[in-house]
Amino acid sequence: MTTRIKICGITRPEDAQQAATLGVDAIGLVFYGPSPRNVSVEQACAVLADLPPFVTSVGLFVNAAADDIHAVLKQVSLDLLQFHGDESPEFCAGFSRPYIKAIRMRDGVDLHAEADKYVQSSGLLLDAYHPALPGGTGKSFEWAKVPGDLPTSIILAGGLAAGNVGEAIRTVRPYAVDVSGGVEAKKGIKDWGKMADFVAMTRTMDASIESDMN
Image (tube, rainbow, N blue to C red; front, side, top):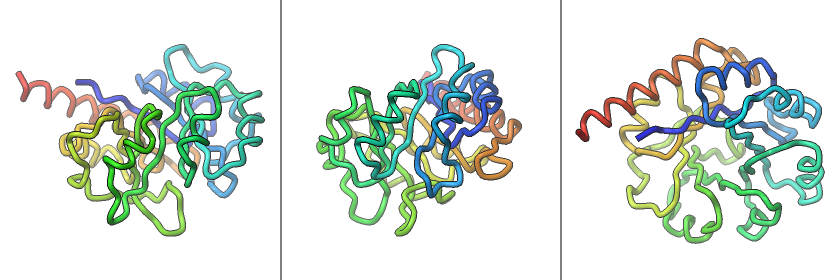
């Protein structure tokens, strides 16, 4: 197995290029004004201008108006949309792009029901719950609560860093892991050493799991 890696909250072209050099599969651009990692259309275009092929560009939105999302899509070449608010399945599917839906892991969440609800999504991104924040909390949740038989791709987020991503992968066996704050020097500015360590630990755990299976 190969766990895909997404680094979210990219604001600078050089951070995106370094992520690609490290073999990261996707980068995330945040289009949410209250976030310290929010990017303008101009910033987003600059980030993507020199991004090499086969690195997926993901645009993150939180309860944005449809017109605002369409306006971004007219100017920014996004491959995948990530909805981090209370968007309905019909809303998420309305932009002629594949999408993933973030689910905040509060008590009582039924992930099988969420997978059925967002059946058109490319996957569910599981993040820690905070009553006032839609994401980017830097907190993890209890990974053992994730069922192993979900009929969709699982992207694991929430408080991940090099020090815990191995345990997270072994516990959940997700399709992908998503990191932001865990590889930062400060909010919106990535630490290249932390990014390299995160990628290395992910690949080390992949190799360990593969060895266990053989």
